Image (cartoon, rainbow over all chains, first blue to last red; front, side, top):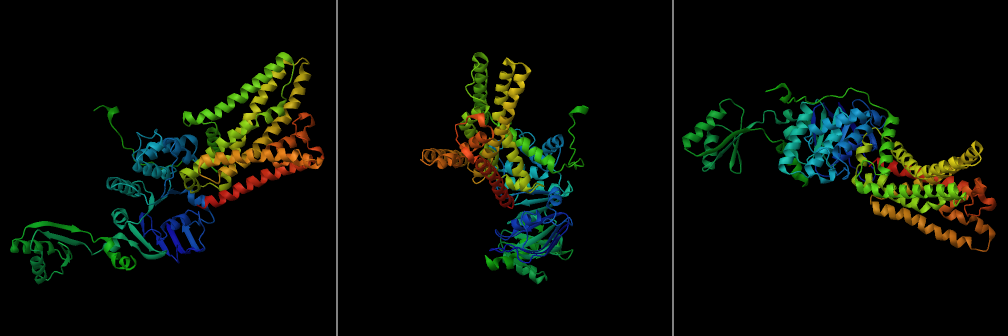
Length: 300
Length: 287
């Protein structure tokens, strides 16, 4: 659906350097440190800025040549504050719906709908100035949804939110991507939150592609069991090694790859034999972060 | 549980209705801007100033019409009326222009506009159109009130009405010229800053600073300098154009043979403001 080909964006600062990426429909996480070129990438997809070299295709359309066709099908949620304080959310979202070409009544209906989906139905007639940061983020999301786009571009949707708000926003984005049938490109500098909800991941670093793949491919065959005991961690590690399990010690937690069916039982038996107080034994997906860890520490 | 009390989660509905083109979007911004100019759909506080101005100009027009009906005297003709109201119009422009453009800039709304199928030219074009309508209405409606007063009390019957209409129509054109120039200058200044107070101050300053220049030049000894003095300020510039095109307007500006110069400058100034605005928004639209 989104096909970014070679793209060099120059000027005095090179924000994107020779980036080639091809993205499938679904929820795509765009990850990178601040200043990696995530926002530039999104703006190029919207046709707001022209790439200095290379080509972009969104739905097979070139945003530099046909920005209107592309923008008609794309909803954009910017990173920064973008809401006037002295109008109500309902009025504002309706107005933006009309700018997207919806007729008056349709714009009003869809604005209410969009605000209902983001959980602001009751508060929609209040002035935006009185909203909390979390509510403002929701209004920004609602205005991106109002014209029923096929693709949402979210620039740091969890910016400035507390942990609860963050989870709610991520759940909402996940719902939009799965239940609403809208593809989502969400960008973030926090890998942890993106990997929870995304189907695939594009990591960029100072304008260059680090890695692009499906999350499932990145985490395939990398499920691990985390074992935590209150005491005797070293003894258990040694015992497990003698059983032929490749144990990794991560602080107080032992990580054992879950590659054989009886791994689970063997660990339990080892713990029982040593008579150790078992604290925790759970299966966890290999964190995507670990895949990048070596490269990311290189330039921090 | 009764049928009515069941809450249905109807889920997300795709939109398959019509999507309108450029003209509808232009219209939406135009209506939105026109309403904003008069504070409609905004808080009570933002209605005070525009409606105060509307009230004053209408009251003046009603009084003028009444004086004329009662005494037959004509204290101010249509064009003198527009000139007399100039400072009120300037304050109106100084309040409304920032309301239309600085506000969007300040709140950072522009990325939301320009990530939609909207051209920079359409955005600013609709804003200009809305403001020209607002300013023009501020003059044209009271002028119409004066016309009604004159038309209903005329002693020469239909011929008097036609004569009066012949005075009104050029005055409307004159008001439109006012609106175009003041909108151009006002929006251009307002588009440079997101701070409303700065924008308003800047607009008033432009008019305030240029007026004394006219005064200084007009008392020079050179007759040519006196005739060209009006060019220095937007207000006397428009008066000069009016004086040249409608000689019995008695605007108090002496243009002599330089009338065309006034008209050319006025048109050039309007065109320059529009082009600069467009250039400004081309740049802003790319974020």
